[in-house]
Image 1 (spheres, rainbow, N blue to C red):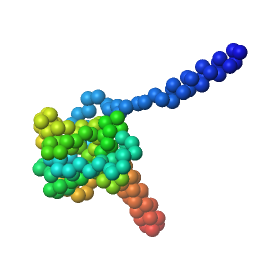
Image 2 (image 1 turned 180 degrees about the horizontal axis):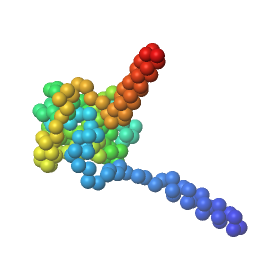
Image 3 (image 1 turned 90 degrees about the vertical axis):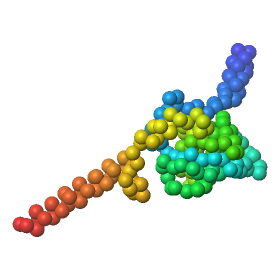
Length: 175
């Protein structure tokens, strides 16, 4: 009898634990500089279109949001840009509204720009502090060519190996 009760309690515990839902959780206090550093596009834009999938499967489904771009800090200087975001805020999607202006921090997701509630994106009327900090950020003089920190290690290592190889062959041929 004890085994049956124990089995029922164990099964109920597993049942209850499997229905635990975790909503989107963001790191508190992310600065505009950190948002900028984690982005591939940073711009101000007015939402002109929100394209929702015809058949919704879940809050993870992406929606496409099209912006008329008015200012760019990072990325291509374009007139319009489409960004994807998850449909539901529980899936870290950002809830955009048509005809509203936003400061958008976007990264690349599956070949498209994407953003979410944890990126730092916000309504323009709440973005004054971000804009002040973004205006202080010095962009590279040649934004067409940039490498990440991890790539710098590889480039540095390649240069050192190349130099050592040259010295080795030069000293060998000298004898």
